[in-house]
Length: 80
Image (cartoon, one colour):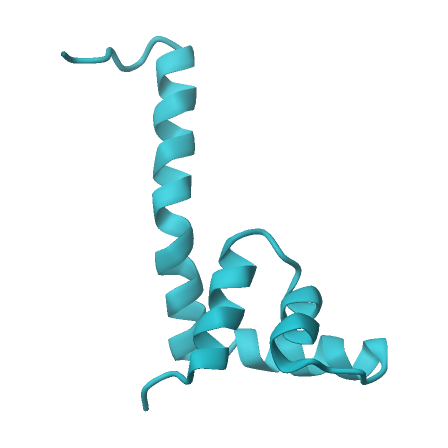
């Protein structure tokens, strides 16, 4: 089943560094208790299609960080 626009935005916010609860509150304009928001955000983030999207969105940042650390450690040389 395709993700909704809100689910995609939730995934993007989590991948971008927001906590699951913060992303859920912002995307779904939730005014529920912190426990309810935490539970619903966790449930949403664990859905396989959403978890996969979060990982896909995080991957470029992880690869970039690895390259930077590798260069700093002298493992990689920049090519021109």
